[in-house]
Image 1: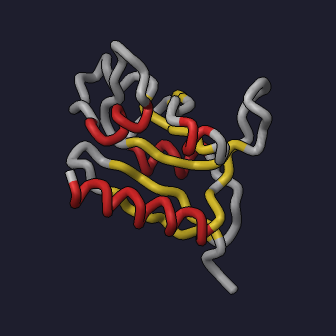
Image 2: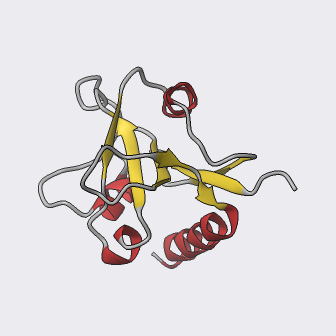
Length: 126
């Protein structure tokens, strides 16, 4: 069965897209292409429900320097006072324990779909 995994992209217009994958491993090339950048930064959201599931946010490391548009939805998910996310943001999974270099993986498809549905319901209610 194909497409057992996915990662999620939140764009600057607060829209979320599911990108389906056959295998869980993410490459730098596909991340650069999906975000539209040359360097990435990995940040961890500070919302407990998201953090407990080892969800990480992958963003353009130079996005603020390149004056990319603020990503309000990603900023709210990031939940760090006095900081904000710009440009597209990828939600993926970290197989590491949080104390070492992250291992970037796509999210199991059922989990990605649940997160997507929860996200789209919260946007509609807002």
